[in-house]
Image (cartoon, rainbow, N blue to C red; front, top):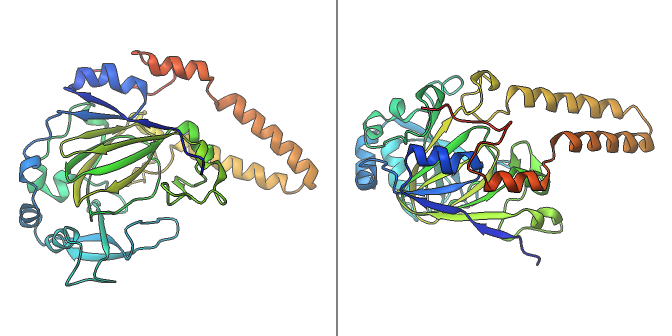
Amino acid sequence: MELQEREAVRVITEVDRDVFLRDVYPLRRPAVLRGVCLGPCLQKWTVDYLAEKGGCREVKIHVSTVPQMDFLHKNFVYRTLPFNEFVKRASETKHADFFLCEDESYYLRSLGEDVRKEPADLRKQFPDLAQDFHVPPFFEADQFFSSVFRISSQALQLWTHYDVMDNLLAQVTGRKRVVLYSPRDALHLYLSGDKSEVLDIDNPDLTLFPDFVKAKRYECVLEPGDLLFIPALWFHNTLALQFGVGVNVFWRHLPADSYDRKDPYGNKDPVAAGRALQALERALHALDELPVDYRDFYGRRMIHRIQKRTVYDNTTETNAQDSDTLVPGRPSIKPG
């Protein structure tokens, strides 16, 4: 089988705000940041401590008979458990109490109090635990969008997707493999909305997804205490090598009015992008009124126009990746 080109994600130590803003953020590439102070959570967040501090508040979780969860085909169910019971089960490989089977897998993505309106915020949903976690001061306070508590069973793998905001994935306990793909490789990932249809990225079915091998694979393994910077629009797929606890911190790196105000998850495309995609759908429907040869011809013209407007020149991108300065037209963080 033809293999994807692979590259290890860059690892940087002794990163503070100045280093992040100067050497990491402008490149718009993922980076593992080591040695950033995350607080006493690294020592405190054992299963027993989490259960005690999280208490018996009910949480909505994903439960699956297999560890490879697939959001497109919904091979999992949603269930509710007291947080302390959930943590206990998620840390086990065999369960005396279960919903589907004794080796079922669990995944928590914390939610806001009003799931339809309010983003997740560790400080509000789990205030006692939030005291142990220090949010890295790499962005302005008014850019903060959400802090998402994530807990997963060992071997749990989440589908490949992108987010529309920049984020830091803090790995607090356990080890996690993360595979990433550049936004430039979107055409090779067989997208359905913001998710890739290629579920098994390690053994893809190349009869169904022949171009998947053209996507360059970036990979890292996060150790407890590591931070992974994931720029907006970078696709990522996570695999828990052990029972793991982490926190995602998302922030608005575009002007606030770029985002859908009614989006508590922060995963809707920017407003302008949403309008453009809707316009594209209308244009495609309009082409349906033409004979097939005309549809083909004008479809190709549309593709050409899109390519002229959106595809980066390879030389430009190479220079941008090697530069320590912000690239014109790319998002920036407000200076402190």
